Amino acid sequence: QVQLKESGPGLVQPSETLSLTCTVSGFSLTSYSVSWVRQPSGKGPEWMGRMWYDGDTAYNSALKSRLSISRDTSKNQVFLKMNSLQTDDTGTYYCTRDTEIVMPSYYWYFDFWGPGTMVTVSS
Amino acid sequence: ETVMTQSPTSMSTSIGERVTLNCKASQSVGINVDWYQQTPGQSPKLLIYGASNRHTGVPDRFTGSGFGRDFTLTISNMEAEDLAVYYCLQYGSIPTFGAGTKLELK
Image (cartoon, rainbow over all chains, first blue to last red):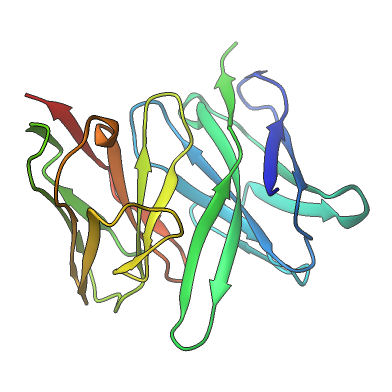
């Protein structure tokens, strides 16, 4: 069955770089795109960026200067790196499987989510 | 960036009640809206895609509607398991979520 799982450090120092890994199973990274979504405690989620199935990437313009998403298809992993972390980057970070349907109408949705990993930015 | 404004922020409901949640886009997004449900400590779960299509396994008491800027999620017969926070999402070039509507028991 489809599964995604995020992993990474729970605590990051201010101004440091966050590195997270999303390990997937039950689908191929060359058939489906994977997004990163984060959510501060008590607030709505924020889409951060996407690794397309063809290896291309897309980023939220608000984060683009600090964010990099890559993958290793042989290991079924997608990676997130974000630099210059500040306290307002604290929250739960999720990876999601994206499903895109183009016919008969265009649809796009996050149909599977990992359990999330909590990241705290603090000294 | 398209801003999604959800109303109300929270709502007190009763079991068996009909509940209507609203989501308004800052510009027209066609039918490019999904709805997600999040219970405490859990990841969001897809309910509705393309404004009105129920995802696999979603009970038919959940109905989505709308086009352009105004969207609605209706729960026809509230059940205890529906107490959660509901988010709308528009999936344009930069997908954006609303801030959510929290359903609580009266």
